[in-house]
Image (cartoon, rainbow, N blue to C red; front, side, top):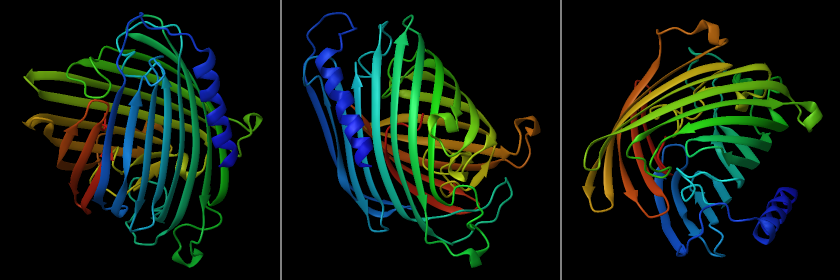
Length: 357
């Protein structure tokens, strides 16, 4: 973790010292958005902390994003992000080069493992899981809509204090114990959205192959392919209809935490985190987002997903679906999100930042 922090700090220092401004020259004011956290979530219990975003502090169109969070179920979450130019300021603009750097530490004392497959059983066997991750992404906008990205990701997983007598997770489970994943990715994005924070209209298509290799210092050899598409339509005023469809396939051998997944606050919101795991997955969602009062908004949503051993097994039967509702609080630099998802396995409540898609 100490090494990751050193790399992250050095990268930001070099960027602030030497990085050219890529966007059209203009004077942009500094901005700051903050939100205190006092929440409840099904996976973490009662939570407390805060989030803050500072933009253009050094007049280079950069942004800093910080989240500090703790909870009654033992989660500890630290998230630091730096962008130059800021991802929202560069949206819909052509630029020569941009950097996004993210550092994240997340410790969860009560995680689950449900085995691999689309028909696994629910269980209440819980154990600690720690994740330390650094992401570095260099991008270039060839046009206002076509963006290419080169990414590097270093992730350390620590899964421990589980009981093999549960007959769920054991020492033979890929990913149990200590694991390092080092991966390179290429991404091509077609993006016509009017905003990345709160889009009202536009389309987004992302194609992303990723390679994890021992030559990169990884403990695992696998390839991951991902396609994401999403669409946003303004019905009237701030009434928005949004939809998404994702496909993912993994080849090779990977820890279970790297497999395609259905279930958590970002995928199928009516199911526990990582409820369904396998090498291939499909996910779709539809949201109706509507205004309530000033900066407050609401949402109605439906999610559905499926996992398979191979993408060739894709079919339209036995998908895991949920519906739900939620609230949104729109700040200048980010969105505060509250969701409640309902499925045949119960109700899940989530407090998060950012739209799901």
